[in-house]
Picture (cartoon, each protein chain N blue to C red):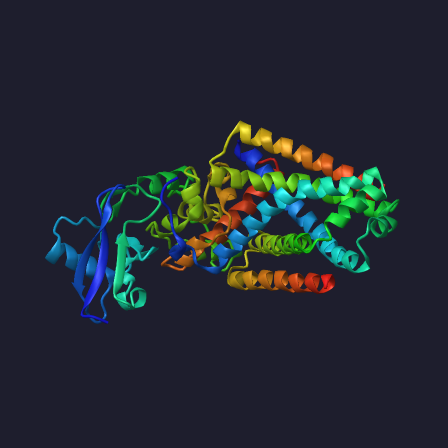
Length: 112
Length: 117
Length: 238
């Protein structure tokens, strides 16, 4: 990949990291709250169903994750498995799509 | 792969910070699709989600969940450290950042465990 | 603690082996003293490099008990309290023979990172004025004392895992030039150091900073390069 493309990937990784920093902090706090307030389906869904603010929040979370995880994996695959080049990048784009699709499906299921 | 360095050269704080960050990232990358798929059960209605959630009530699963959340806290703290190193050029503070990240992860691990008990 | 050190020294090329030697222990003895004794008194065919033997040239860099060091500045008491020494050539570099590593790729990458100054003035013009207390110059001064010994390159795991990675020394030198207000090749240099083989491959293991015998921090310089490259990319200059 060109220097410019690699730089853009690095920027996307750091930008998504900064965004995820906020999302993860909120998520970590929320998970403690959720664990204490009850984890039955009814309990969870009564808190989350139709909640547009949380819908927006978790949609952002999912999309940032879909950017951040594949770029992070890119280095690991190259350095620890020796997998470089087009096939690796194509696989990672596929993984990004998978994360986005499964993630949005979950967001709609829980918050829709 | 060329023969590189072994633990004698690698045994210093920043290296462990890197390894924790990478391993936790890998674990999260494997976990997330499963996590999304599980939560997607909610689409099929509360009962379907409930059935799945009862499965997660087993102690071993609860322990694994605690583990995943701790890995997330560790990855998050390590990530903040990297952002600080790359954007702030805090040379003198570098070793302290490792300690701060580790402390945060430990604190969260305890908090979550207490919430579970 | 016996009167002798048990020393294992790498012999041969990549497919070599450690050969054991017994070396008399002295007070205030460096690892270079040990290697010199072996070559002079025990095994004349041993190949190794040294020059100044006082910690200025970096030629004597080797792997001592798994860690890259300047052997002339490494006291045996510090690294082998139990009297056992394992001495090998620098890692991440091809072995020519015994303790001598081939530094060619190290310097090739220095050139690939455009680690040389490109002037913009001639003798007929005024001197360039560089304020020594400016932020940029202080950053250069903090990184400029590198003598190209290869210890950081040998210590870097990313160099091991990524054969194309330019490495900490080359990138550190590029950083000193990027921050040098007199230099005329900024755009080309930033393009040379960006990417999967450049500054973006650094994962802040910081083994380079940990091991540098001159206490430099290539990690800091590489972080600076990441910022400079990002800025250039956002401005459409890359």
